[in-house]
Length: 308
Length: 308
Image (cartoon, rainbow over all chains, first blue to last red; front, side):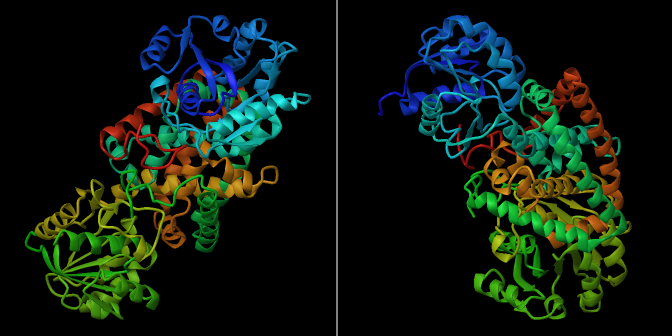
């Protein structure tokens, strides 16, 4: 076991991400003590039953008292409220962070409530599954995934480095960028894919000519991969689209131009244009495998864990 | 071992699907002898080296002589040509089938070249991976997947049942429908998902503001699941979109209406509309898991085979 990087970690919102941080922090000995809290009595009870926190408090205020690392893991839309509530109770010198998938709005909403002696270092671990709640978390969630830090200008460098060390200990690679750039990058790598997946799954469900049972049965043809994304937490995703409206609309505009071009190629029977486009996208997949962000093992059409 | 259902199986085009049929047919003792052929000398040599056929011929004509089951496993766009070439050499009473992802065009292109004493039973095993070629196949590919048969009106029922038994022995569930209905069902469950995945991966690659390296690094946020689909064989998919133009354009029209509605909700900041849509799509995912067409295990953000 390493020496703990922090004394007390407070997690506000022990859902998929929050509870995974708790599990990973304990497994790696990253902190001495873990305190968790949730607005929901059921979630608090579940965290007690799972035994993944050293202490579960009823209020946010109690949770953050004395904590030197506070990570807010609630939907992006309520992060500002939570910051306002806990701001006055944060310990001087503590690091306040979050895990929100949008960073511009986090800086805007949480920033003003952070008292001077507290270091505010927004973060976004780019990892997740389509499941939610404290039962869905697991300690390995962040291994070999990226965690993006978006400290506002003037943030103490030592504090940023301490939080980076925490995430590295949990298995993540750390990168730092501005909140604005983060929101553009995530608009294309995450937000637009989710929006499209949500759309097509809804489209399929409203067809008159094809039954839902047929859609489900023959989903192995590609549709299935979209449903996994479209099963993600609805509150979390509603907040993301509202908070990163500009980034998402920008990427959506480009996507619409591109799908219009491919549609035209189909309508005109332009096989060469289709082939050129499809051949190009293969190379991108190879890049992802080379970077270790997915495995080479083929996935659809067979159970996970299958070995060739 | 069961008694073989057929004496000699001829596979024209031993790629991912063709070579998987060969492997599965041998593993299950479905046929006595397997003959394979390919236009490409490299592929023929590879099949010999892999030892997955009893005989590899240089021409399609040689391959089908004496075979009582012939399965054409080439891209949809060249199936008609192949049928024209092999038609005169098919054994009376033989079953001629294919594995094309579009069925209307297959019936139109292959049908006229099938001599009377041959039973023409088009088929589509809804299974695959993003890999291509004889090395990519594996015997378990069809297990618990669906195989759709689309016999033209008047096809001998006994022949349809014999082919259905073959696919069941390979592990598949079998369903029969008209070619036209098949093409609508697959347009939404497979062709549109692929078109969209190809589009967004291309969109991401052309951005000025976000580098390709950033897209690759942070792909675990959702984008990665699209790249897997967008890495599928470009020739196969070019042919599918050209052959199922009407079905794809129909579904694309509906998709565009739906994404316009969600875009408007984002632009207006209508959180309730977004939430309602996202909550509905979750139920569809559950249906797919209940039908055994995917596992409950979460996938993105961690290596395949991970157990909770």
